[in-house]
Amino acid sequence: MPDGTQQFYRKAQFAPRQWRSLLRYDGSIISATPAQVRRYFQQMNQRLIQSEARTQAMLLQIKPERLDYALRLADLSHVKIDADGSIDTASIKSALEQMIKDIPELKATETQPAGFRVGAGDGTDAVSDDDALRRAFGLKPRN
Image (cartoon, rainbow, N blue to C red):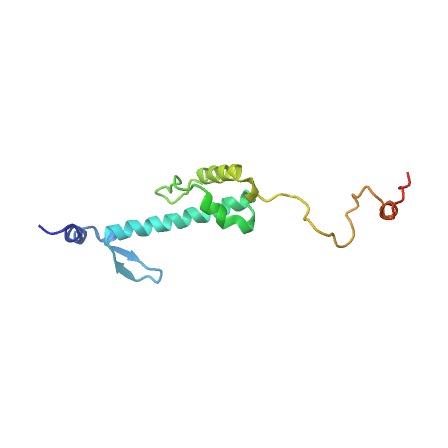
């Protein structure tokens, strides 16, 4: 009795032609087993899911410098692709929202940067320049 590998290749010889061959990017045809075809499609599906997850993460305003880290943390194992190639974006979005809820530091915030401000202010300062100078020299501000 032949071992499992030989049995597999015998069965693969009788598989339909569309399962035994794949098109390369340059259009040439290579020979492949059904297992290789399945693995190829799984890899392509994972690339599509990662691409859609990156888009959804940007829409949810995750910090750009933390984007790759956030995508590795998100649980995307339950995301499926339909037979027509459409991705379940709702499940990707819910996974990313759950990750943001668990680690809120990954989301970008609208705060002023720390440090010195260069240039003119935006006019919202409550203290006038005269009052700021008076405080700097230890004098009481004018009322």
